[in-house]
Length: 253
Ligand code: PEP
Image 1 (cartoon, rainbow, N blue to C red):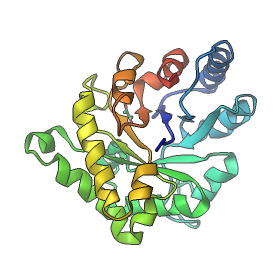
Image 2 (cartoon, rainbow, N blue to C red; image 1 turned 45 degrees about the vertical axis):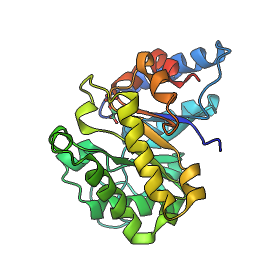
Image 3 (spheres, helix red, strand yellow; image 1 turned 180 degrees about the vertical axis):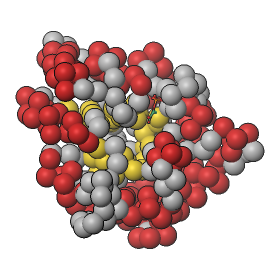
């Protein structure tokens, strides 16, 4: 079975109007001047405030899709500062990251809140990219499996395995995010397989179709070894996605 492959760039809190314009102009040139094939889907997730500008620029670059870094779990109302899934669709987003470890850590997002966001995204037709992953301490305590399966379970208990129809999972070991440390392809593969096998206990076909991305200090020099693993279907890229040329190099098959 061939699964969709993707590379998703998470800019986090970086950028300016000028940088957004320069980035997409450079990415467009790189894509147009290259005969290399790209992964099935290339997605860029700028900060909310630059989504409209990016959407306009991407009209000239249909190979690249737009995503957001977060979404409200509420549909609308008195939630100052929050952005609804319907607004992300309105502005041209197709994807949204939910449960990123930086939000779990700095915004104390609970499993319940993350599930609310996941289902709010799904209800509007956005593709949620659910981030799961263990911390350094949890890995040392040999709790990687129970942590990632617990994060998966928080979604499964709400609406069962069908929740993951048209969704994406990103395995992002927290100790590998922004640290320069990467899980070895074998370490990452083991967790990806665990996630897929767990979902396969409920629905084999769905588990086989579900893209599972790896995230954690991915760059062009280590991407290919990771992508060569049977259950790694692409990457969620932070730091290395900020340079258009580097992001493009990661996106090449
Ligand atoms: C991320 O932010 O999801 C991430 C994986 O960051 P980095 O690539 O910088 O480790």
